[in-house]
Image (cartoon, rainbow, N blue to C red; front, side):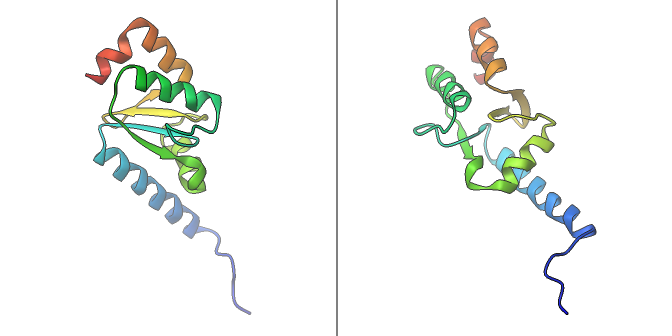
Length: 115
């Protein structure tokens, strides 16, 4: 009988592939927002707020719709050790989610980071 599901070491390889995919996205883009939906059509209030903050600051950024890729959706949480989405990365460094973005926007810190 043929095995349908592989277990054990192959699961680690899958996470390695996701990590490489995330690192590739971060390497190709200075500013990346992992979000639910797109900036034009956010699929949750937190993602909408994150996209609105970046729009208000005139930031040019790459967005990744985690709803389109379940592996990225789970993988990004592990990659940055951050349990929620959205997640903003600037120059491969995790900035945080929408609450942190809002605090940094209000203090002017986020505007400085985006320059």
